[in-house]
Length: 291
Image 1 (cartoon, rainbow, N blue to C red):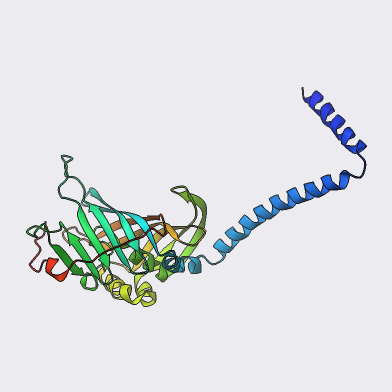
Image 2: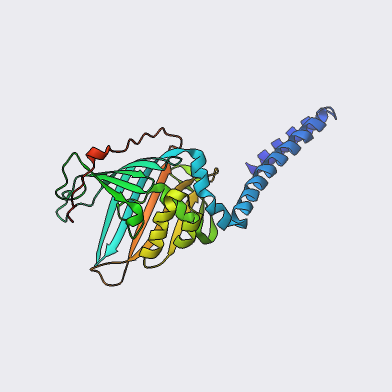
């Protein structure tokens, strides 16, 4: 069979040569164009990877700016905490306006050991310097919101709300000290470049937007360490598609340091986002009981 294929190929080649020089140059040009196109595509991807690996710290620090250019997106969050031999995961979903730094998330708390929900989902509104929560805290009327000044929180609301503010999470990357390009992969079907590194909260606070600077400065003082290890996945526009960060704090009744892993997924960029904030009369002014 292989011999017949070679014979057929040689016969076809002989017939093409019989066409003379008139068709030869065209065939050669076509081959040259084909090789050039393939080589250019390959070298282009290689060049992009080379640029990605050349200065990963600079590339990662630019990610918040790419989100501002995108304007808005849908978001999913998860927060995992392991303490006392127990691991809990809190999940959130919603949308975020990066330019206005406004977001709305529905946060679902973990189930009890019997498998039934312990709490109703919490609605969270994220705003510059503030966190609004509904269905949060015993004794709070169902139609009232609880408002928290994020600059007064020892973690700057990076973990308190059970969901890291997506833009605050991105702003942490402005404090990137070390980063390495890991390689290409996909996140939810989108082609991305994976970077791994460590950011410093104090450095991030100095480079953050005015609305986030105070909260990040509080986190730098409140966490057990200012170092935040991260894995970030950026698309071809430099936008964050996935960001996983590790925060460490002293765990109150638990001895030692508690690690919290926060994951933020961003997609559907450009989605219209409207986040009306509560009227002052709808904000609960009483004491919120611990649950």
